[in-house]
Every structure is written in structure tokens, then in C-alpha cells.
Length: 465
Image (cartoon, rainbow, N blue to C red; front, side):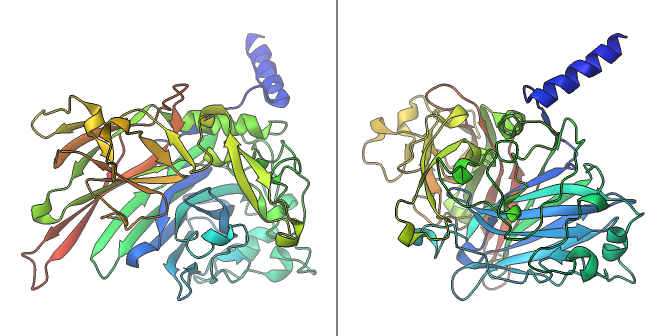
């Protein structure tokens, strides 16, 4: 009897939107995979791999690339993975400076051809040339495909190639693609992903596993078509207020869903889902080693990606309809919740001071001697996390950063220590809010004893906390 009452109570809480939960899976497998960084800066390419570890069911997967500054959607599509399937692709910089996708994978996608340049429609004019070059990636399992229906047959590989039957995936009208909801089953957490940021010419590669997240329950199935079919903004669909007519007033389409705030559970408010994922990712600080020894040209970059930051923004509509007739643009006005202290003018959040220790137990007694360079007044130093994907270089002094070639949201922390470890605060300086952060450290060293020109070694370290 008590078990029955408990189950009823949990169900009631979910329906009211008063409770929601999410879990970060230590095994790296889940419903949602978040890749903290991609880059095509300074000769980099980024290789992406998404694996369905389910040997029975297929997966309908949403893949979305978001820019580093304010996580605007710059490229998204759907992948249909058959059981045990792997989808791979490469992101490079095109001749026009815009990132582009290249893949020869045989898995089905919508659109059928994703070998295209990234899309700048939702970037401000000042960002269109560079805004696609760095960011992070969302990988979301929208639903499973049981081996008992036409969709499974349409995407299941035959002799290494998926049929990708258009009459099933798209239907008879390409302008109003098929609704596949009835052909999908409850999504299960069997996705795992990784990215490799690689600079072939410099012999550098940094391999980054995704952070895997699963909801407390996934009872609902809803397919969102990869089409420009308008959808009315609702807090049961998304916590992204850029689509709120009273805020950003950007027109929302089916391809905008799902996002990280879209509830898996029926009746759960998107803001509750946002807060649940944020709580699962929240950390007061992160720890990493750093190496900046000039004798081996060593550099260290720390990536601090905040995949739910976007859902705390408030937005302002672009005022002139003549400059934005398609309702694609909005500007960040501020933020609330854990990001209430956001400085909207430069998109930064002030955090606590870093704590550096060298390899021989040395510590810096006065934190104000650590500066964000260039800073002629160390006593006025304010440490911040800038943008959605902050890249903090150690002792680099300038941008682009030394290991990753980052520039869009890059800062430099300068210290007297050459090598050691650092605790970087991810707690807001005001309000003491722990921020939802994932990422890694990229360390590069140079060995001039290899061949005539020497070679680089790229090392990837996971963040600790």
C-alpha cells in the first residue's frame, strides 16, 4: 500500500511540473549526450562520432550545433541509427570562413544530405563571419525504433547501407514531412558520443567524450519534424525565451525542438527540466593541471562549457521589422536564476578567484596577483566566465589561445607559476550560485627532438571537482 501511495505521489508531482530530475551517467551512456566543444579555428577540424549501443532498437536522434557566444543554433539535423550503428562526420572551415559539415556515413539523416555549410540566419551581422567556428553540440534521443515497424525497415542497414526509404521518412509531401510519432517507442538511454578536435598540420589532437545525461523518467514519445513548420511558443515545450513573443520574438519551428529543456516526461514544465539538468551539471569549482613551460612550448587551455546557460537568458526583439522580417534575431537582455548576475553587455558572469598551486606545494598568497591579461591594474581584477563556451588559457597572454586556437570567448589567466594545478571557481561572485559546467583541459607540448622540425603532443585531461 505504501509503495502504491509513493508511486501516485511521484506521478502527481511530475504532472504538476513541481518535480523533475536528471542524472549525469558516469558510464558516458545516456538519453542526452553533450559534447562540450567543437572548433574549426586556426586549422582545427572536429570529428564527431555518435554510437547507438542498443543491439535491438534503432534511435531517432537530434543533433544540434550551437555557437560559443550565446549558443545560437547554427546547424541541426536528425540521424536515424539502426541497432549498433555509428554515425560519424567532420566539421571544417569552408573557404568563406563558415563551418561546414562533411560526412560519407551511410546512416539515414533528415535532411538526406547534411554535407552543407552551417547556417548564420540567427547570428547578428557582426557574428556571421566568425560565429559558427566554435561552440558545443547537443545529441538528443527523441525516441526508439522497435524492430516491428516500417521505420525500422527504412533505416536498418542492409549489407552496410541503410535504405533510407523516402516514402517512410518524408512521406508524399516534402514540404510537410511525415509525422513519425506513431512509429517510435519510448526513448532509452543508450547513446554515447565523442569529438576529436584535430589540427593535422600541427600534429595536435584532443579527444573529448560527451557528458551523458538521462531524465528520471521518459514516458512520452513525440517526434518533431526536421521542417520549417511554425510552432507556438509554450513553456511545456522549451525554456528558451528567445521564442517568447513578449521577449525575443524569434519565430519557432519544429526543427527547434527538442532542446535540452524540452521535457521527456508528459506534463513537466520546460523550466523544471532546465533546472533539473542544470542541477545535475552544477559545480562550485573545477580542478585541472596546467603546463606552460616555455622550454617545450607548452600551452594549456581549459574549456568551461555551460549547456543550459541559454535557457536563463531574457531577450529583446530586434526593434526594426525591416531589418528582421523573418523574425530570426534577438539580443540578450539579461538573465535570471543561477545566471542572475550576468553582465549582458559583454556576456560574462563574475566568479570567484582561481587558486593556483605549483608542483612543489607553492601557493599564491595574494589572489590579486593573478590577472586576466592584459590588465594594468591587478588589484582591480575580476574573474569571469565569458560566453556559453568559455576557454581560459593559462599564461598565454593573448588570443588565439595556445592549444585550441580559441578566440570567440577566450580569456587568459596569468600567474607566476609555470606548471602545477589550479582550482577554477565556477561559483558566481554574487549570490554564490554553482554553475552548470562541463569541459576538459587541452595541454600541448612540443618535442624538437623528433625529425627535422619536431612535433606537437596534444593531451586531454578531464576536469575534476
